[in-house]
Image (cartoon, rainbow, N blue to C red):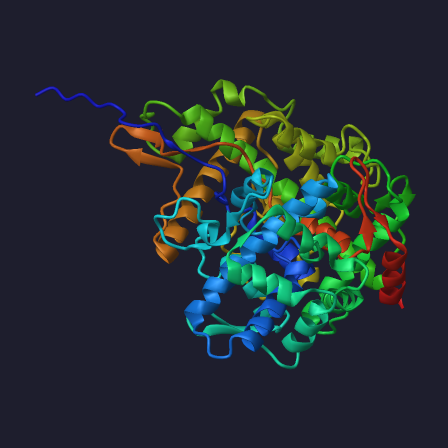
Length: 536
């Protein structure tokens, strides 16, 4: 009987997976450099709001059950977001100062815009956690606290304790003072009256505008501002010192760049850290800040390496997409892939010659504005989809060339435990090893084939380990009786998020910087005072 084989659905698209394990060294670096700030803890106010709410709730509802607490917390969460969105509307200012990154804003933001002519909105409509509630703002039982802020407040700052299973509370030594300071200048009775009523009008939200995250440094909130500055910048624990030093480096950078034009403040900071320059001037720092600058430079270098490898993998998947390819092994698949249009570019020479020429011709590391600098390659990879193979290859050569100027373990300053990166084979140390031991005598075709084979084998290794550890299947391509085929498409290459955007937002929330579209933030007089304090 003749059988017909056909596809019943297109491969799934995935964008968020670390398919090659190349992002893990980046995560390791920025976690050590900026502890206590995560990719979802965007607003400084919530570090004080949640402890304040827990303490205020406890004082008002002495015999409340944990279920009642969760209900009121979720209502308060919705109320806070509506206050912030309404304040952005009434002031006609950018949301980054008001409601940006407030829990549930995508759901609740449009609601604030619909309030007019005395219309009332039900808070319970959005706070109700039932699965059949189409208007639910968040699924997590503890709302934004459980989803975003509880972990850092409990594990890094030791302000809160507990979890959804045991119940959430605050530590008397740390949580109570922070909660009390945050409450200064706030009308708690008015806030809880709105929570109790379970509904608000635009006028109600206007009367509660002091609760907007932008008002953390408003008149009458000095205690709250000081307490949160101390939480982020005056902690003398090991994590606190690391966090404070990165914040000090950011403030130093902003002070000297003085509001210079910039499309992306984070990219500009990383470029300055990588080159060791502030614009066209050497960046002279204290020994402690210089060590942190080198840490962020290491992050940037590892990020470029990750994007270069991911570019090769993305183009390989794109070329493989379609009917299965009847090839016997990865080496055969790699040989076929480099013959496809996606890999039409060929280096002008073998790897050894490429490396030697780049060592001679590459712009100086400090010449970050040069069009042939690796920072330009980084931008080019992100500007196109699919990203160009040519740029990825040039970037790998450049990074290998820079590594010749250094000796030993590229990650030595992190003081990692032995074997920490052994499960992530495409790192800076392995790049040095491949360049010295495996690629030196390969011609252009053989080297390109070796690169493609490296990413395919590494992906299989990473995916198999993930499957063994968590049961999660993350394989992007598979082998069947008919040959190799794409199981999941890679929509685009992705960067890691090093928490710097959140750090910049926190500095603004604390009143230490100002913001102007298209320019780097500037230090306020308080920001300059705090920087001077941290440098003494």
